[in-house]
Length: 146
Image 1: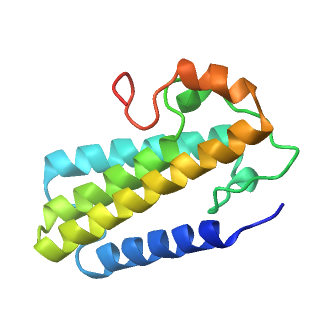
Image 2: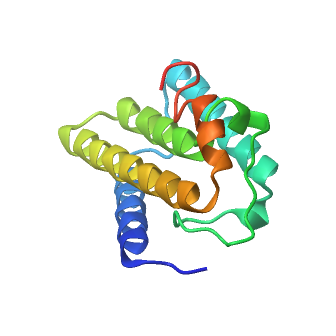
């Protein structure tokens, strides 16, 4: 597996944003409605990890040559459930202790993850033409919407 410079930069930005969000407020929202969304989003991430088998998890958008397309569990509906989990959980944390700086950090995280998932999809399509068929039947981040 080859890891390129772009992948490393995207992961570094992602990790810095997550660290800044976690270090500038609570780790779990205080508000009950935000807690519900937080737990549901966390559950989505755990389910996605379970389906792909945790040992296949990677931070970079690069993947081994022998990787197989997973289209079951949450991947049956959305292509990037772990990104959805990360964006939702961090958004709930930010909304619970709102500040302009935290919103800006979350927006940077969103942009970074979006660039990362688009890049990841390009890498997958280059290796697996079945992904184009899978892509037509699923949404990127939000079921039935996007």
